[in-house]
Image 1: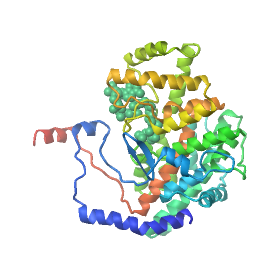
Image 2: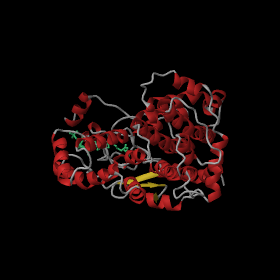
Image 3: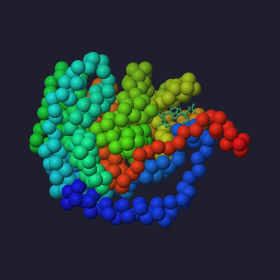
Image 4: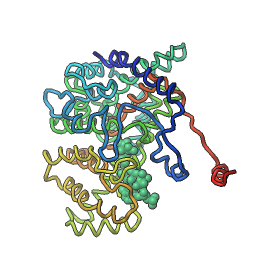
Length: 433
Ligand code: NMX
Ligand code: MLT
């Protein structure tokens, strides 16, 4: 069954479940909010419902209930590759079911049919100054594509609210079909003299991305599949997911919402941490003119922490263990590039930094997140322009964002509009006024 039919089949039960909860338990209280939480980034306050994925602080992300090792093991693989077809992952995110081989391949075919890119997208990007950050170009390209939004056009003439999701799904498939071409050719525009590379019709979505970057290497294509699966979703309330949900709740279409999500991902505390982490690792490597000893690194890190510096790739707002996405990439590296010096440095930092963060007592989570390693693997395969790394993250993350917003329309979620207070009102509440 294809994605659309699968969602349509599941929708009546999902709608009924939500309606029943609201009708029978609408006033049931699930949380209190403290002043500390309001001032502290709404940390820990449940503000979103999404069944696409969930993070248990002690276990890590589960995509539709499946852990990272399960997702890697269970999803269908291409003929020449050990890591899953990204089309199968999109099927899982969108429908909640592990696809069969042919269902995963059908998504790959849908993407090939929908991948035509209007000329104006790259005209916009070529008009930008050379020094424009790749994430700016990526977000601009998505906005430039908004001209193709079926939802925006159909809304103008009137659509039944119950059908919004189907048109969001069509826009999502159209956008995600074009993203590897956009992302890879942003790289080519910036770093390969503007050569425009078209897709190879024989390759899958993940491998094609690698191919269009100029890398015809089976192992790198597999790394891309792994990377694109791992970064696809991290429940519904991280900065990019929340931003795109918020924008989508105003019925701004998939293009507006995805671009908004990318603007959040471009921050150094969120997705840009992967470029920052690689930059930081190279600085450490250069500082020691190679790999430091454990003692040397310990002294160096202690000094950096005492100077109040943030170490990119460590800490997390929800996780309280090593990110399973870090572990999956470390396993790839142990198998295929165990002697790579940067990877060895990543593992040395992993051995050394957490006890120091614990000793310092500030970070609530001393363990590595996904960004502590991802750049070093890209670097090994020759993708050395690290300001491009967040685009690779974004290419993957839009799979999750578009799934959340398609389901938000399917379940009839209203415009998001919480409440803001003034300091005076807050003080009055404390004083019982
Ligand atoms: N290095 C040094 N100090 C840290 C780190 C770190 N990696 N992580 C947290 N702290 C500090 C943090 O700056 C804060 O200090 P202060 O009270 O002086 O402001 C204190 O520890 C408490 O922060 P937490 O409550 O543990 O972290 P929070 O939930 O606010 O933020 C992150 C989570 C992920 C934003 C934060 O850990 C961080 O900035 N890490 C480095 C950047 C990073 O790796 N981001 C990537 C996240 C994953 N992603 O891809 O999006
Ligand atoms: C993510 O993948 O979105 C990050 O780990 C950040 C988060 O979950 O808050």
